[in-house]
Amino acid sequence: MIIVCQQCQTRFHLDDDATRKSTFVARCSVCGHLFSAYRPVRTQAITFIDLEKVRQAEADDTVMAISNRKGGVAKTTTCLNLGASLALYGKKVLLVDFDAQANLSLCLGKRELPTFYDAQKAVSRPLDEFIVATAYPNVWLLPSGRNMVLLNKNYFGSRDFEFLLKDRLETLEAEFDFILIDTPPSIEFSTLNALTAARRVLIPCQCDYLSTHGVDQVLRLIALIRKKSNPLIESRVLLTMLDRDTSVSQMILSKIKRLYQGQTFETLIEMDGQLKEAQILSMPAIHYSRKSPAAKQYIQLAREILVATDRAAVSAP
Image 1 (tube, rainbow, N blue to C red):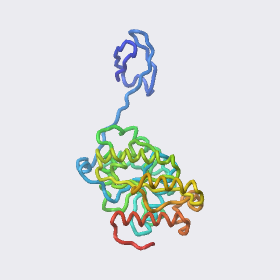
Image 2: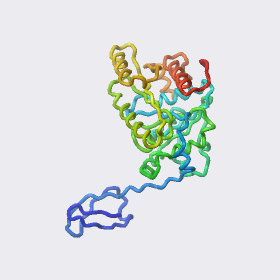
Image 3: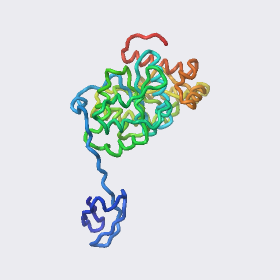
Image 4: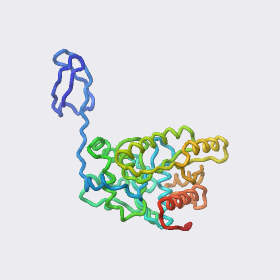
């Protein structure tokens, strides 16, 4: 690696094995100046199945990303409950846990299993070998785990890195009616890959005016993705955690609907004690209590999505 003295601009070549630290202090042998130096970040080349095909192909209409820069807005809860609700309509659903925190996997009782990172390291093996069945009919999971952070470390910035997830999901397009991707509350490898692979983005937004900042950031990112790699990507905002008993929530709801006029789902997700109980038990609300407000609302959201994606007419499950 090459380091440069900030005082006299002398360049030095150090063996990569000289230090394992990412940041270290060096002394210039010419002028004696002490300065901080950094090991270069080296990205790894990505092995694709068919890069040219996925670069040219439109995003699959069945793929939806759940995304927001702000945490605590019910991304994972929505991914889990929407997936389970679509399954009630007889749809085969794959949930992709693309967040290194692995909350979706934990909610489904799937711990310490091979992840997308393992699948990428074994690119010659079919992706469906890494997909596991869940306790719920018609719902499958591609788990996450601690090694998912290595995707960002090893590949972020590599050439065409944003097409990696789309490249692998292309092999599954005929197996599932819907693929839902749970993303982290940050803009990095996982989120950029999810937005490149998805035809639609569902943006959960808590009925809290500050939550709109996270929505705005995602919408700006989607605009960039639309220009660069996914021209047909669409997005809608899902209002969550609504407390109908407070005038403040109603006022914020009205402001948010005006702010994102024509960009919100008709369905609203309310604050619901039974939904919180279901979360504690790591269950979808509809399998904990089908009569709870949130369960009914997620089922209605599933129907709204089925209509929006031009699926066959369905009756309530």
